[in-house]
Length: 332
Image (cartoon, rainbow, N blue to C red; front, top):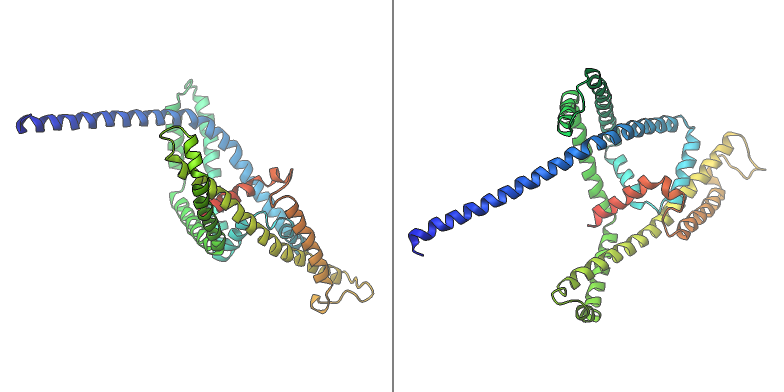
């Protein structure tokens, strides 16, 4: 080909390639849009049922918690620390980070978002009722999605939502930074164990594994071994961290319970023949009871492998999910 015919040919080939890629992109966008439209209605139905229940339940629990006597609340907190502190070390540390980094801001942002969600859901119910009253017939998925998106855009307060999301993002950044520093030793341990195990397994078992695989698959051996060693190392490192957290939280929780009980006895005038002083600094009873409770709390957690036993694992599923996600975020 001469230069006069080559360049037009090359330009035409590039144009055809670009047209094919654009057609494929449009096809992928069309498929994604169709999938979104098909799943939008059932997803909205689930959210309409779940979100009000979740918001109202959270508000009721918060009101009931605030109504509890201070001593009762402290005993509950101590019990959680004593018997469940090692199960959720990252989650407990995140809560402490939020308290130090802006607890009132966090509550205010969640309250603002929950109010906006309730406004949208109530408006959506009224919109559905009005649509049925008009008797417009069966509505296709595209029209339904457009109608609901228009409702959200017109009913939500964008300034409030933007401010609340910005506040939550700032708090989240603070939490991630705090956890990364707090559990830096755990992360370093996981990386060190993973690298050492990966190198050893590749040297010892790598050739055997490669010879057993079909030709062309041997390139995946280092990658798969790396994934395996990383998952095992991370699990082992977090198990050791859970044990350390269980010990410290069990001691703290046991002392909270014993000293709160001691204070309750003093308030009621119970002295047990002079064994109960007015202040816990004047006796070792609180330490003795607290350390006994701590031993029981640690044994409970150790017995179940620092994971919630049945049926607690079902009740505490949201906490299990949050703990797993936090560990993934700071270890990835």
